[in-house]
Image 1: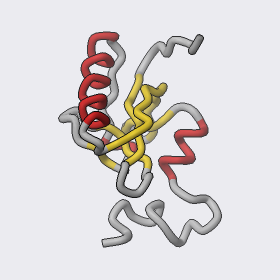
Image 2: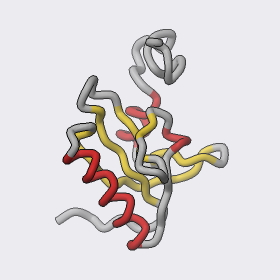
Image 3: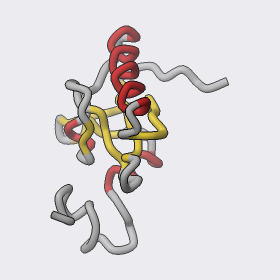
Image 4: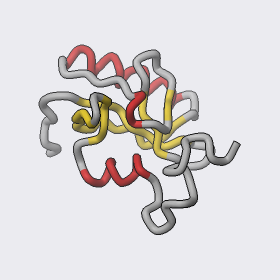
Length: 107
């Protein structure tokens, strides 16, 4: 049985198109920037965000939707667990390449 998360939470998923980690915003859209994520603490708010995320998954926009523990970093939302923090930062072997340089690096 999974441990119940208490405290601030956020929604993370992967884009179906390219597998990139994305974070759910309050309006139900997705952002590759963790600081754009909606955070919720109350069960009803988390369930509402989760329902929006499941609609995106059903529409084949994202997959692997997960509610994760969140914290703040420089006043913005950020994943509390190391696994998701590393995903948010991007590849660690070449910090001069990829989306850790800029969320719009490929444009």
